[in-house]
Image (cartoon, rainbow, N blue to C red; front, side, top):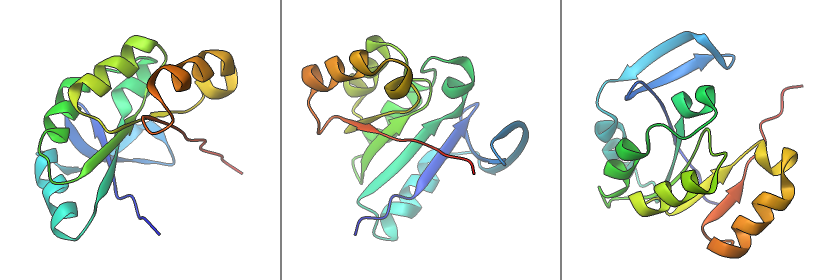
Length: 133
């Protein structure tokens, strides 16, 4: 079993949203690299990074910061949040992300996501579905 500790980024810092609400944010670490290093030190092989600014904007926003974290080299990164265009996928992969996470677009535009899977390969893209019951 592989556990994926998560880092949620908003305005460049590590946060948690209360019940997914962008108006209820708790800040945890102002230096995301410190959190990433702590996960690596604890034995994580992968870290899941969410671009909350991207999720809110509907387009990937923090790919430069996520790329800096990916180049840290201590763990592999899978990242998503606001990935809605092929350019978002390309930027994240070029930034050093091992796997791009696609969420709602897989439901609303499955043909688009299928084309991305064909182009980038199934190792570079994963699908994630958050469900609230």
